Length: 508
Image 1: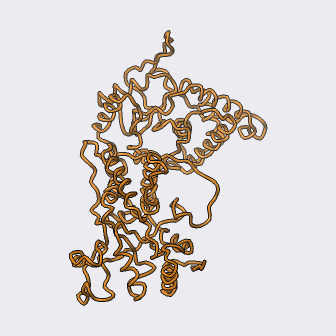
Image 2: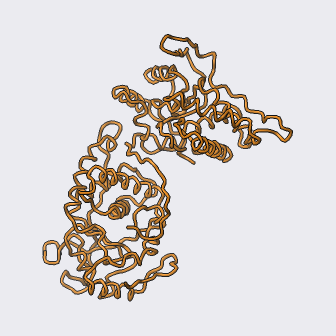
Image 3: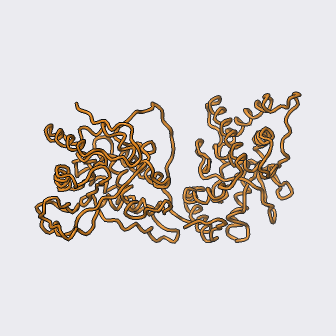
């Protein structure tokens, strides 16, 4: 097999056309298109390197949806290559937004609608090859004249990553049609999220000197050469794209692989809050609707992913040293998890408990790390008394929300409410998991890292798990009962969103 090394690439590198001429001749002689794509791994990485972070997140969301479709349909019913969906996502963003900040729901909807129009897809770029070289130009015309869908590899013009099986796209289109009816594609008032306006092909006006029959004319990417009606439409213009290859899980097995994995959950969510600005506070109607929906479904915290942006805003401006303390607590949590093996409380509960400890005990940008760590461990020991919440985004002032909060805060301890979603109690669930973690905390409190140089224990901050004057406790036949009295004093604290053990801080 011949290889076409690209060497050490520099930014804006463009291969000599001779490389692609040799590639085209070799593939045509073998009758195998895309045979040498692995030789262009570095070029594919360079092509995908500098995309915005939010676009990469959208790509991950599309890939998660793709994997869900794949698991439902099994191995016998093939789907298009995942790489085609990744490039389709970048194309949708290129043509519909190009902004580093955009509505994820709009982007996701646009990709699904393009999947529905797969029979018209014709996508390619001219960053590394173009029509200017006659041999390459003639080959590209032939490639773009093939049956749809056509998605050319930006680094290898011989590779159509859309595949050759139209039925696989039809199957994926059926999945897309079903997904478009889900609540995550609706605004809070029930209206559908709008999609970006994106054509299924690159289109621009042809030069005046060109005609559809002129050699070297770029074919319209929505036409077959024999169809005069399509030839009259217009010519194609390519657009540059770059995305970090390390962020993309599918470059079709190109490049080195680490035999390690990382688990993560990607949850489609409705864009319930619109564009957030500093100091933003949601309209109480959003939370009233949320509460009614969760109560009707009997599922609390069901829609926490819809409030991700608000959760980020809540944690965005914390001091650097507090974030370091959160990382320390998370490291301790992972050590406990390895030791215990059995389920522990959600990691996110510990992160918020750390924030609460700092707010109530210090509030300073500079503090003693050992004191902060000790305070968190002592709060874990008092988990049966924890009641933590905030009123930054919702409060007791609105009657429906206030009544719901009283009901939430009257539940068995521990209670740690999501600052962005009052329906989510991240501290609730399995009390035994907190007991197991408390045993680990008790053991760690005697470790040297929590002692002074003279052997005496490090002081902890004075932090109460709750304001006792606002709660009355009764022992009932069926367990414990807490009753909330008039107006609470806001205790600085938590958020739940999910009771996954691996839930991580939305900022760190």
